[in-house]
Image (cartoon, rainbow, N blue to C red):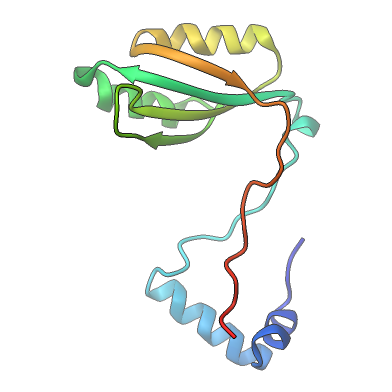
Length: 130
């Protein structure tokens, strides 16, 4: 849901116009990079989600990054240190789609997959200073 400027202002002791101005300045300074929404992927027929760790072939890393950007089933891509040097989050409709995704990833390196059983939280709010 959307949070109104008035609600934010009441939490930080500012008026709605002052909150709006602060948000604008934080956007200009790129403190706020973007605004986002939270989607229930199950309602979009993406009933299976989880994580894939990939041990990438170094010479294919840039191609792999492009593959991840172009593949709608991959919802996040993190670069890691270690043998398993990429972690992907995925959301697909079923095991058949997951199997196709894993076959596509195989050309870039070996992988380990974990299917998500549930989510306790995805994002924490940053506590406001007192």
